[in-house]
Length: 348
Ligand code: NAD
Ligand code: WQD
Image (cartoon, rainbow, N blue to C red; front, top):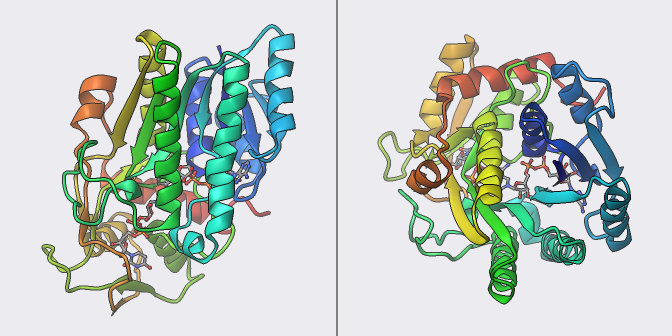
C-alpha cells in the first residue's frame, strides 16, 4: 500500500519513513527541504540496506503547490498504485519564529494543509495522520493533559495547528462516513534512531532543549542556559514529557493501522510517555549516560513557558495498543550518538 509522507525528510518524518518501510509500506515523500536535507532519506535507505529510490519516491515540492500535489496523486493513480493514506508532517515548527512572522506560519501550516486535503478529497484519499502538538493545550492546564483538557494555544504556531485540527473536524462532519483522521498531539520528541545515521538536524540555531544540549556537549556552544530554577517543580527547573522519536514514529504506524482497520472516524490522541523529566534531571542523565560534561548556567524564566507539561497517554495505549518503550536514558544515548557521528547534522 502506498502512503504519502509530507515533510518526510524532516526529523520525525524520516524516522517514520523508516518505520513505514520496515512495515512493508511503499512511500512517496513530498518535501521542500525548507528545514531538512535529502541526505536524511538516503540514510534511511542505508539503515535498511536499500538502493536509493527502491522504496521511497521523492518529490521536491512545496506543500502549497497545488499543481505538484495534483501531479503526485495523478502519477500514482496512473501507475495503478494510488496513494491511499497521508502522513502530514510538512510545516514550520518554531514557536518564536511564529511570533515574529505569523503570516508565513498561517500560509505554510494552514493553507498548505488545506490544499493537501482538497487534493486528497479529489483523489478519494481520505485517510490522514496529522502532526499536531501539545502546544494547542491552554496555559492553565499542564500536567496529565487529556485530549479533552482545555484547548487554547498561546502562540501563532499553536494556533495554526489548532486551526488544522478544526478544519479536519469540519471535513469529517461534512462527510462523516468518508474520512479517517488522526490528530496526533506530540509532546517533546528527542533522541534519534539507534544507528546514529538519522537524527534532528536543525538548519539554524536550535531553540529546543535537546539539540542545544548536544551542541554544548560537542563544544559548538559554550554553555547551556537553564530557563529558571524557581518553578514549582521538584528541583525548580521546568518539567516536560520527552518521548523517543522512534516511539513517536511507531505511534504513527499504530494510528494509521487503527484507522485503516476501523470505520471512518476522527481521533485526537496524545503521544507522550506520561512521565515528566526536569531540565536538571535531563542534563544529569545526559552527562551520566554519555560520560560528558554539560556546562550550564541558570538564567531567568523564558516568556510563555510552563512549569510542567505532561501527557495523559492512556487513550493512545487503549485505542492504538501503542506504548512508548524507550527510556529517557536511551533518548540521551541515541541522540548523542547521532550528534557525535554527525556534528554538522546532514550538512557535508
Ligand atoms: P522538521 O522541520 O524536521 O520537519 C518538517 C519537514 O517539513 C521538513 O522536512 C521541512 O523541510 C518540511 N517543510 C517545511 N515547510 C514545507 C513546505 N512549505 N512544503 C513542503 N515541505 C515543507 O520538524 P519535525 O520536528 O520533524 O516536525 C514534523 C511535524 O511535527 C511538524 O508539522 C511539526 O509542527 C510537528 N511537531 C513537531 C514537534 C517537535 O517538537 N519536533 C512537536 C509537535 C509537533
Ligand atoms: C523544554 C524545556 C524550557 C531551552 C516546544 C514547543 C512545542 C513543541 C516542542 C512543536 C523547558 C527548557 C529550553 C533552553 C531551557 N514543538 N529550556 N533552556 O517549550 O516544551 O516545547 O517544543 O510542536 O510546541 O513549544 O520545548 O525544548 O523549548 O523546552 O532551560 O535553552 O527546556 O524552559 O522547560 P517546549 P523546549
